[in-house]
Image (cartoon, rainbow, N blue to C red; front, side):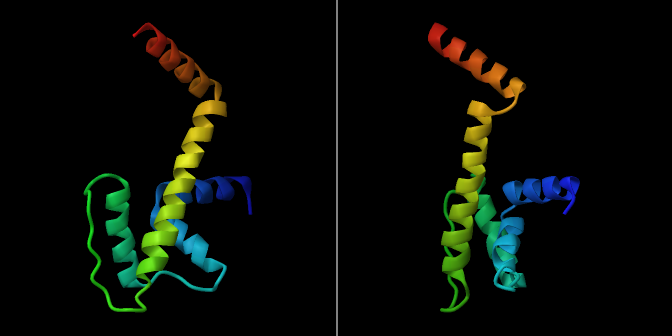
Length: 108
C-alpha cells in the first residue's frame, strides 16, 4: 500500500465509524450490511453529540453489540486517543496552540 493510500485509510478510519467497522470486519471476511450501516450512522450521531440517546430495538443476532459496543466504543476511543496524542506530542502548530492554551489558563 502506498503512503498516500495509507494516509487516506487512516484518515477515513479516524473520522468515520463506518470506515472503522469495515476495516475491523475485513479481517473476518465480513462487511457491514445495509441495516448495519444505518445503525452505525445513527451511532455516529450519538458519538458526535448530535443526539444524546438512541434506542435500538432489533432482534437477537442483528449485531447490536458488535456495532454499538465494540466498533463505536473502540472507534471513538481510538479517535480520542489520536487527538490526545496529537495534541501533546503532535506537530509544531499543535505544540504552539497547546503552549498558548496553557499560558491563557495560567493567566485566567
